[in-house]
Amino acid sequence: MLRPTPGRYVTVTTAGEPFQAFLPAPLPPEPPVEWSAALRRRFDAALVALGRLDAVTSLLPNAALLLYSFVRKEAVLSSQIEGTQSSLADLLLYEIDEQPGVPVEDAREVSRCVAALERGLEQLRGGLPLCMRLLSEIHGVLMSHRGGRGKTPGEVRRSQVWIGGTRPGNAAFVPPPANEVPDCLAALERFLNDEPEPVPPLIKAALVHVQFETIHPFLDGNGRIGRLLIVLQLVADGVLREPMLYPSLYFKTHRAVYYELLNEVRLRGDWERWLDFFAEGIEVSATQAVATAHALLALVNADRDGIAGLGRAAASALAVHQALQRQPIATSTALVKATRLTPATVNKSLAHLTRLGVVDEITSRRRGRVFSYRKYVEELAAELEAPG
Image (cartoon, rainbow, N blue to C red; front, side, top):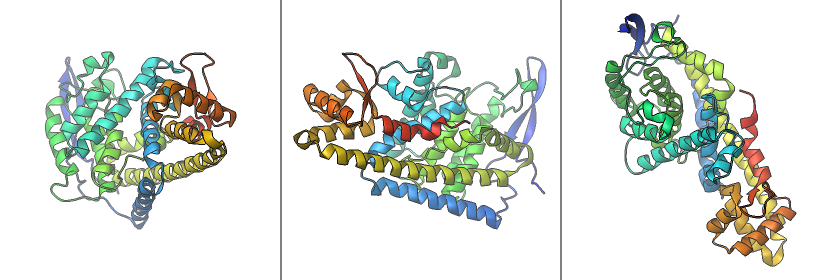
């Protein structure tokens, strides 16, 4: 038997039309979550998978290089859930001022998602706790574009929002009225920071994600900020040293179930099904991230062995090869800057790498040529091309 709805409905009237808005009860859930043996095992498995992923940070020699790409992978996936069409390659092209294969605004939107995560990490490492000030700041980064001006970037909403439908009266879900949002967020912030008592980090991440999406504190960008919050909180609580996780892969693959279970918590208080789904998603995402990291390491090592056979040219070619692991689509000019080698040396190295089949030139022009570490990009992007 399911618990009561974790909150209450309040009647609001806008433009003369009354509707019901949902006001969530503060966390933790009351009555408490029913922890079956199967649900506990699910969270134990997710924590083991996260531990293996965190170990990648210290065990793999190129973990810092992988981080650059993994952060972008999460941004691409999270943005795809919201309807953008940008691929990882499109984002990488946009970041070097090249024309992506999709509308520029799609790639630009994903780039802002990357910048938002990086700003959040910078603030955490600067000593700011995970709080609404931090989330408002990264929202400001995410919405820092011409179309975002009307969405009050970095500010908690002061008007009603709704999900689905054309107005609150026919919406699928109506979050709390604007005047209730500050109190809802204050309670959420206390829970995030273990008041009144500590909650295990992974359980906290699962509960907070639902609560944040239910409060819907911003006029736009709530889904992306809510998914970034998962990774930021796991880093803040010491579960991960680096944001190597990309949970949006699982959420995108199972998008319909993801939205259904978020709603089931609001409608029926079914925290248990959501927690099971969330923990499975974290386990799958962490396991896939580890597998991708090891596959990329195997590719890099095999290519490095081939490059080592170049004799005197090997040292500079290896330096270019290393730079391409951080930025696997790059111009020769960017590689000059990254390696601090001369343009002539970089171009000779790229010629060697092209002959070895490590890189492809993808522009067919004399100036401003763009090179792709093709197999690296393909391995990194393989899961992104799956339907979802």
